[in-house]
Length: 331
Image: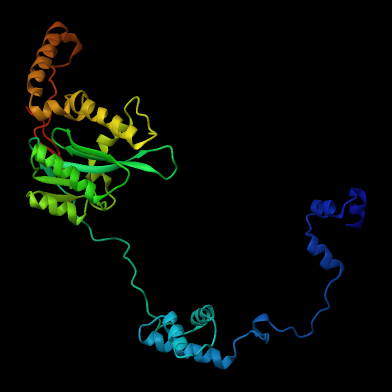
């Protein structure tokens, strides 16, 4: 090392090249005198060490507390209340961990690995106005940690947005106001389905719906597929070309979604309802357009039968729509 230091001109560089720590090199240069009968650190008589008698008393108090189903903190605080201070709280816990007989130690109940299985909610609608689905999604602002909340109610049969609002926060009071307005305008549905969010399961909202004779149904925990209509509607909004993604103000978000809801209900050709708009399904005018479509498709088939393997069928909306239910097409 001395030669390498002379060549490099620096002991630090020489130690780095040799892969030797500086403290190791210094210790090798001036090693300590060996102790003939060393005492293990755990057995050394430090002035701060708890006396054996105090340690035994602490252990006894901990065991007495455990026998009554109480914790180490309970034993420590109870002794302290009596004016007895034997050691720090942390020391009591260390002594408790070292007690060999842990049988008396009370065990806190643990959550089971699997919760009780819940049946999948089954919701069926055969006409508009029977079942509504609702949810809340985040609409982003340019400010970190701040989002706007878009509330939306969907009629699952027609896919029409029957109620919505955009706010600064999520609240059951705002949800109640939205539902009260929607029910006043369109009448009460038979069922309202939602996930398990706080606003969705609030007593205030359930009381409002129950007062109108509406049954409430909810997702299974951690199963987003139980609320597909609301999730799909939010995806349509956020993946629509021209969606800003970031809204400078709450008013900007409200104005955009106001325009979006009008477009979605009246102009959007929804793939889930045979490319009709939600308002056409809600009003029943889709049947007239279906006739026009079918006539055009059949005429096209007559002109170019070689382009088909069999006579085509014009798609129509399902006569039964549901959650966790397989829909059937109108013949």
